[in-house]
Image (cartoon, rainbow, N blue to C red; front, side, top):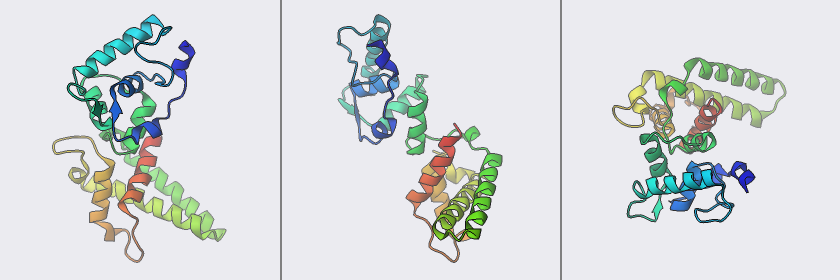
Length: 208
């Protein structure tokens, strides 16, 4: 039974849910597979059972006070505020899904520049091979990351998660790019905001 605690959780699926019930929130924050454990299940190791009971109590006195269902973002923001560690995989997909903000020190301009140069080389190689679809994808991704770098450096306040915060939010970066879109996409159709969010999220999540 204890071995199931380390069974891989499908964070991508869980983060897409409109809400988590109390049991789901408890198991996700503890990185425990909810399909194999419950608070009252016989045979759950004592140490794990106590952790589940304590986390349940904290959540009942926190975001679940008076509620049966709470959104993933509210649960995770509460956990951060209380200093409760969020499983790495869950935090990563939450940031990529734009549910949690990106810490400003996680956006390294030099790494963005390196990624842009790699995409430019990939684009040139694809051009030699006449692979138009791949070439356009690499070019668009390089342009989006270049635009993200420009916005974070030149319009940081427009990219913040909220006023006064040092953290950035993917949706805010994408909106900033869109507000200045003709700086980068003059003679072609610009990508949708959702596409920009996805490309920026893929890059940032790969660096954590």
